[in-house]
Amino acid sequence: QVQLVESGGGLVQAGGSLRLSCATAARTFSTYVMGWFRQAPGKEREFVAGVSSEGNAILHAEYVEGRFTISRDNGKNTVSLQMNSLKPEDTAVYFCAAGLGIPINAPERLWDYWGQGTQVTVSS
Image 1 (spheres, helix red, strand yellow):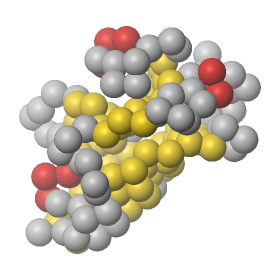
Image 2: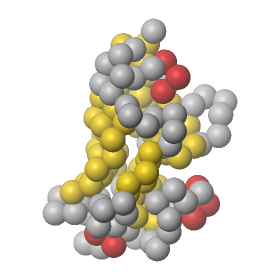
Image 3: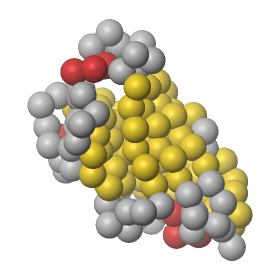
Image 4: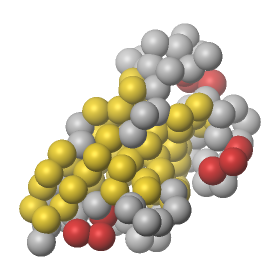
């Protein structure tokens, strides 16, 4: 079992920055592909970014490319999402996810574990 705990959400003005973190005590963290998803009110959950188990492959969704950066630290069992130049349309609950042996941009149904989510609100 892999328990994921997100932190770092909050309220920020458009153009601002936030850094989300996801931590786990699982000793097998370094074997998992890690990802971030988000779900805005009334919308389906969507992929934001993914990183391979060793951190050598990264992918960001086109709507966050150049503004968001995913990274991981296998020594600390954490994955982070640095979010810059935030826009009101980035407002959503952000979820951390973990999966074994899946593509870094795998569809939602293939991820094995999910965090509880953290709210990000961007005001205009």
